Structure formats: structure tokens, C-alpha cells
Image (cartoon, rainbow, N blue to C red; front, side, top):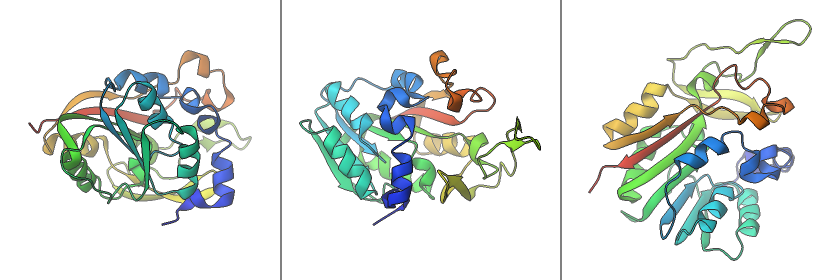
Length: 244
């Protein structure tokens, strides 16, 4: 069940990222995502691709009754268990694309920057709809389709290394993209904005929020954030299960 996040070299690089060291405060989208989250009080919560467990910890501190975190990485889950020790959080090492639970189990399903690793988005939404309670809420973030389309996920530079622009190409050609992340080749799946939203609508979800987040003003002074107003990097979606 190993994946790239269990590679020692890659995991060490990931652990140096701002969102790894600072938690939610180090994530450029957090100030926007936090506003989309529903009331956790007394709720059963599932976090798909829970990583370090930051969102599980937040849900626990906000009064969730029980939280389940799912991730394929053994190393990620080891960190998550340490961070949420003493809270009502259970972890499962599994593929978020195929993991399943009893029908109508969760009030809230979260997923942060994990769904773009899933090949079959429609099947994932069908799975979520099954184990999400009637009128339950799904909140997820993915890399923005404009960010994933061309595939390299890097800027175009001039001969002096200055950024010229960000490439947008092959937008309507959905499917896998081999890209460079932290110096390693990883596979992500590009799909259009239409596919993300229409898949939810066709599976009887109501769209509650669709947001293209920008970094907070105080983050724009950081070297890694200074270019983040030039193109959208992430897409945030909040939807409600219409099943009653």
C-alpha cells in the first residue's frame, strides 16, 4: 500500500513545506477554506486524504463527535496520530478512491488537495454520496483546472530565469498528468471545472459554495506566495447531499 509519501527522501522534503510545519496557518487557502466549513459540533466527520491530520485536529477542537481520517501513507498517518492523540480520531490506511463505509455514516466529508490524485471522480462522488448522511455536507479542495491542464505545473521563464507567464494548454483533454512535485515525478489527474461541478449536480448534490482562493494579504510578502495572484492554483467546493 506504499505510495510516494512513504518514500523517505520525498517525505523529508514534504515535511519542510510551510503547510507541514505550520499546519493550517501555513496553508495559503486556509483563511478561505475555514469560512466554508460547517459547524462540527456533535458531528461525525470523514477526512479523505487526511495527511498530517491537521483538519482532523481542527474538527476535534470544534466539537466533532467522532472523526475518521483516511490516507494511503503510513508515514503521514504516524504523524497524524501523534498530533491528534487524546482526541476522538480514528485513522485508516487505505486508498480514498476505493475505501467504503456503511451507508449514511458521516455528517461531513472533507478532502484537502487529495482528489486530484483520484482517476475516477464520478465513482468517488458516488461512494461519498452513499456514506454521507442525507443533507450531509461535502467540502473539498483540489488543484485548479487552470493549474493542472498543461501538466508541468511550472512557469515559463526568460533566458535570465525571470517568470514570464503560466502555461494553459490542453485544457479540455482530461486525464493523467505527469508532473514534478518536490523534485519527484507524480501523477495527478486533470479535469475541467465543468466536470467537477456537473458531476456533483448530476449526482444530486446542491452546490453551496465554489471559490478560487487567493492567499491572505499577510502571506503575499512570503517568497513562495508573491506570484500567487497571477493564476488560480486551487479550487474550493462545498456541496450538500440532496438525499433525504
